[in-house]
Length: 452
Ligand code: HEM
Image 1 (cartoon, protein in one colour):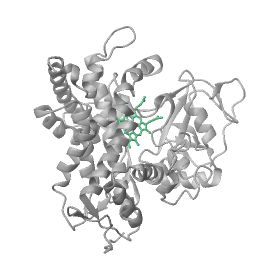
Image 2: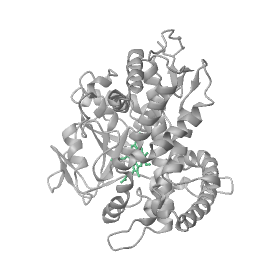
Image 3: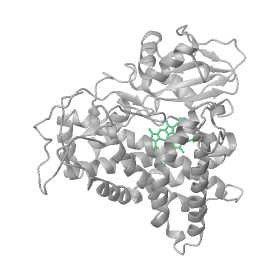
Image 4: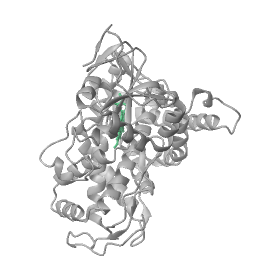
């Protein structure tokens, strides 16, 4: 745990690259820039970045542990997302308010509750794959986005009927635009005429508020409210320690937060899983056999390994409220610290043969929470981790049960930044064949060659 100190500032060394050049490198080739600086300066270095200024980047597990266990009186998370999600979003809340909200949100997302959502995810996968072509290559990212959007709308929003259809139409154009606006400087978030992006976001938001107001009223009048287990109903029933409920406005902001944080991240990880599996035929055969036999151990290890080798969120950022000591370093007040997920996962100090895609490394063990950090850590750790894991397990299990994937010798897809998440550059392309009832569990041997 980092502590406040009055000792002289002592930052880790780093390259002397002008801010503008570093900014371009981070925008265009963040992955390579981080890898190359990390290769030279190790698991703690200082760089100057456009939005954050001078920033300490860490991937050393002891420093990451210190950072994630540091009191929120000393550090806060840096994120612009609250500006587009609203003041009632977890991303906008800080200190005691944030802790109180997490207390109410953690129970609905607890691992034990997730079994109740499995049937929804499976239904959505079955609905989606009905239209997948056989024997012809296609991108899986957009289909995965539809699965995770529908799953969240039903399990988290409790949406059905016309509200479900309206939200399904509203979100695909709204969320990417709002996410882009969140990463732009504040000046861009102004109404510059009816067709300016910000005005468009506001219009979408107005429509969203109308739909959610209707859904909240409906839930309150639902005679079966007590039996409902969607997160909206659980939030309506939740009470802070002083007995007060979460306000309707905050519930609207929070639902939008859960969707924005949970939909693309999970879909992108699933597209990466397909991309990886097609390039590992033996693993694919073992996984299909495991699924046929009703097991999940290798599947879980595979999900963890996909998240280790292809983390869709590359880093999480904290800002110091005081001067703190972090390991041997002394970091001044108002200074950014990036915990690099990518670097932590690809460090030889953290993982043997880190470049190899080898799910077996996680068999019989679970990942260490200070080296395997796709969901961040500490009081700000991803609330939806158990939900995401359940969604990925059920989706992959259903796909493996229903489909045979054509394998390929093509080079792996490159990492492409989509703003919120880093995705396979070609959308996680797949070729599938429907499995015949009673077919054996072998991946297709006639591995078709696909150009890289
Ligand atoms: C594979 C899928 C996912 C990945 C990789 C992911 C990753 C992350 C990361 C890295 C953070 C920041 C943690 C930190 O700063 O330490 C985060 C926060 C968050 N995530 Fe996720 N996430 C995923 C799915 C989900 C889902 C499904 C939901 C909800 C349905 C969700 C809701 C949230 C929320 C509300 C926060 C903010 C927590 C807070 O500030 O207290 N995420 N996620």
